[in-house]
Length: 112
Image 1 (cartoon, rainbow, N blue to C red):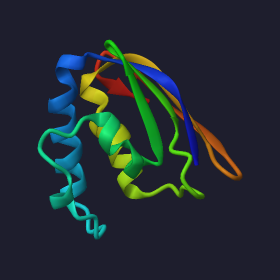
Image 2 (cartoon, rainbow, N blue to C red):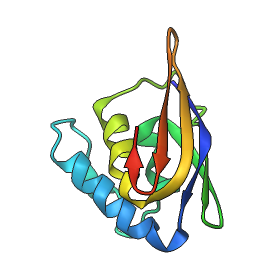
Image 3 (tube, rainbow, N blue to C red):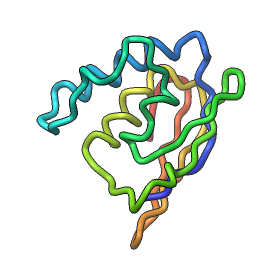
Image 4 (tube, rainbow, N blue to C red):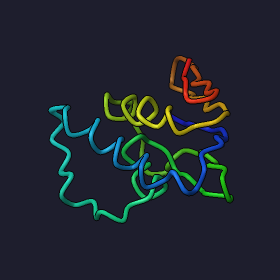
């Protein structure tokens, strides 16, 4: 999976978004060891779980693929994109898979 795009998510909301993502991951039986993530994590630091790489540019998040191996989509990736939605003001992340393409469009805290 290869995500790309840009989301407007205020830098001040990053820690709250991370907390919501981690809570969403915790309710899934994925085998992910959440203890290995320090409390000071940023969205950029945890994006690899969602097969993404994030670069922060002020209040904008730039998405790219994580460039490690052959990333696969998972419930954890979906949970990541859904969990951040209340914090995203606008933007689109497109995901290119081996056989398909889809996108997440955000506007004022909602996702489609």
